[in-house]
Length: 182
Image (tube, rainbow, N blue to C red; front, top):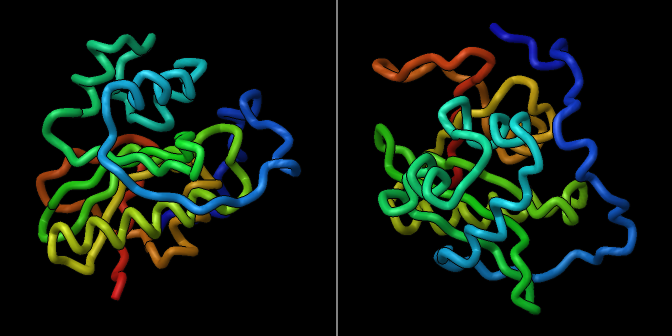
């Protein structure tokens, strides 16, 4: 079994991290993402590495509206954003039914809110919403092994490493995780 604690540290996105001390936690609402949201989210990925880490090797860089919408299956997958009370986007994520589970995809937190627990709060809310919409309490996701902060969040939410589902292409440096939420 893969030992996640022995993986190299994450160097991706370090330059978009900011001092979070002055940003208070906030209440969020989850809504369906629109094209305007997508355009803002595209700006959260300053380089090829950050796009790869978030969207997989299948997400083309540089991002353009056309490739972004195509590569993340915008019109075929539930795409949601978390907004604060001022309407600022806090996070983005997708979900769909995969092998009887609510499969979470392309999860990301606004760079200025990273490192403050926003990811766990957002993903938990997305799980609640997805569970209700898809009538399941089981979840799955893929994550790049170098994304240790995301793996830590997922573990804290009850996700564990699992074997790749039969028929899924195993991506290099990527693991499959599952959780029950009930």
